[in-house]
Length: 384
Ligand SMILES: [Zn+2]
Image (cartoon, rainbow, N blue to C red; front, side):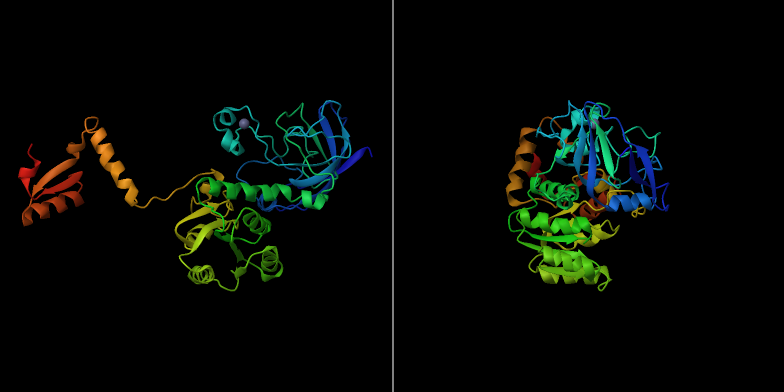
């Protein structure tokens, strides 16, 4: 085989075109991977609908949920990213977004290196100026060259793993990370009741991840019944709520809460990407629950709100309502320990205990003429 067929798109809305590229000469740290299976991801669909917020190097080859077999490998490429030995015949997967590991962001914030400033990414192989790239799994083969792009990360799959199963490893990893994010803020305890919004591939994989990671109950909210809700139940969702049958958000909230019972769900995870999923999903939760937004990963579809920014910025957004009983001594201690470090009393404007005094205290506070209107019923107590 001297030529390799790759599927490319000329731009959003275009039909796929099968083109050929020459079979590359393999560099010492490179490998040619024959693709067995490659999924179609929601990201691909967004790209093909023109939703991607940044310029893309059309025409190019999509497909980043790939699993394949090494057919040719350079002499110096002997292990995968984790140090496992690889060679011709090894099964591999590689992710779409690979942190470079050495940019300013990667150095300062390795724990969120997924926001790397210079990731190895689609079309980076051979540069954006040389399409059609031999990169992207909707093709017969993918070429990786760790000399040209040292940030490239390849991962060995178990020898006995079917490539179809391997092709699910990338999207499943996204689900695992999302639940680990919740675990880190004590938002996903063992036996938790979990509601998953969305029954696309991520929503289905999230059912499995939730159960594997300790959920006691999982409820899926999505559509359509066939094939998606049926599969959610087959994966272990105890119940499903069909958003095509129950169209009003208030009714869906009631339906979910009736299933969950008690005070509401412990954890809700949005895998739907629907712009209004967040405000609705929050109402599935009990007070004190945890919401994970992983569905809204592009700027598309939520132009009216900045809710998607929670996902795209990989944020922790925390609610904080007043305090609990154990907190109060901290307030007392801070005031006492820092009594000379801040002009605490300059906050206060004092009013005497009379109808006029209280009326003025309130009126001045409303008008923002004071910072902290403070009523003094017994002035003698403030002396000394
Ligand atoms: Zn980086």
